[in-house]
Image 1: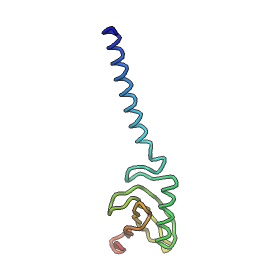
Image 2 (image 1 turned 120 degrees about the vertical axis):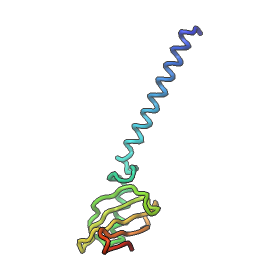
Image 3 (image 1 turned 90 degrees about the vertical axis):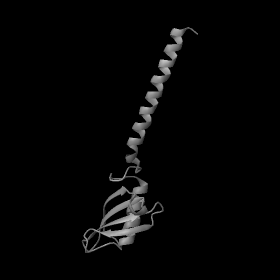
Length: 112
């Protein structure tokens, strides 16, 4: 193989590697659509729906306002719930959808 062809093949391989790396980054960034996102972003999908259901069960009903991935208090999910009495709480769940902690929206409500 001539030096010129070798340089072309090496350059093409490097270009392909950069392209694959960019695709991997783009794929990881798009995971939020599947509910696999970073903390602070609204989660969607069947896992997020399961987290909402578990949070609503733990609060005795109400309305789930938001669900997101979480890492606080060893939690995997954080679901903001407005309870039937109008108070808003954050329910943190582990990866098995078990309640880790429920925190009130105000200091007076405190953590349970």
